[in-house]
Amino acid sequence: MRVRLHDLLGRRVVDCERRRLGRVVDVRASRHEDELRVDALLVGTRAGLARVMQTRWVERRRLRVTVPWEHVDALDDPIRLSITAHDVREIDARLDEELGWTQ
Image 1: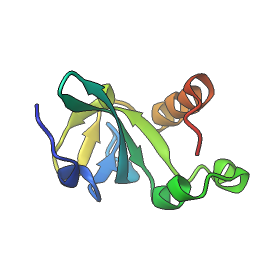
Image 2: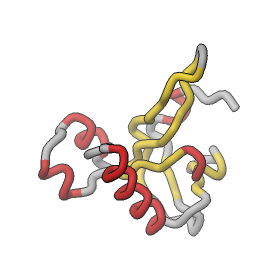
Image 3: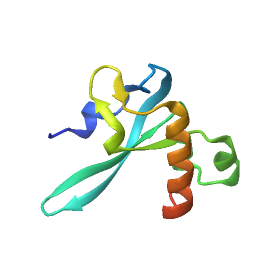
Image 4: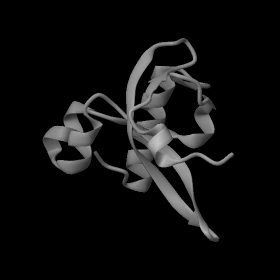
């Protein structure tokens, strides 16, 4: 499926129980041959601040979460995930630790 960045940015995101997580403010992507593929959504009410301010304060505040693309269930409005908000936070913490994806 082809998705344009501007079609994702600003979209609301809910978990599988319809709990609001925030809005998409950025994506993590990697190059695959001649195209970029979305690896994860950067979601949160203050994720833009987290992206700009790489500080300990931002890290402690958990202003955003990283949602791996494989957990996106539907690109409806809002974007629906296949996992709970609790699962998202656990995955996000693990990614931060394993991959160095910091706030």
